[in-house]
Amino acid sequence: MNPPCPIILVYDKQTGALADASQLALEDWAHDLIYTDIEGWALEEDGTLILCDECGSFAYPPPERFEVYFNFPKLVKM
Image 1 (cartoon, rainbow, N blue to C red):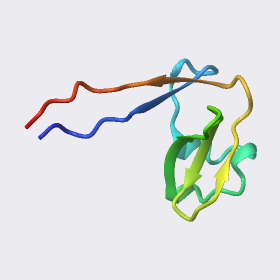
Image 2: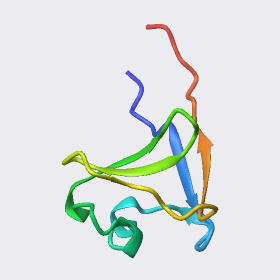
Image 3: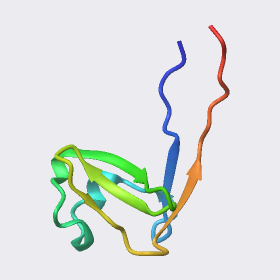
Image 4: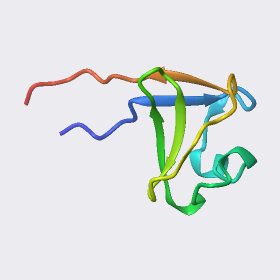
């Protein structure tokens, strides 16, 4: 069985590295999220990036702050 891998890769343009969702939850724009219970990234139907916690809350990051890439692994029939 293949190990899980993220489908959405989010890069922080300020650091040039993969975004650390738990650390970003401490920033002002994410003040309504429970930083110890971050679920991860999601995309709305129109492509808008959101950060979600496990309590059902979500926050919109600043526009142009992040770059989103898709990581579709090769599917192997078992």
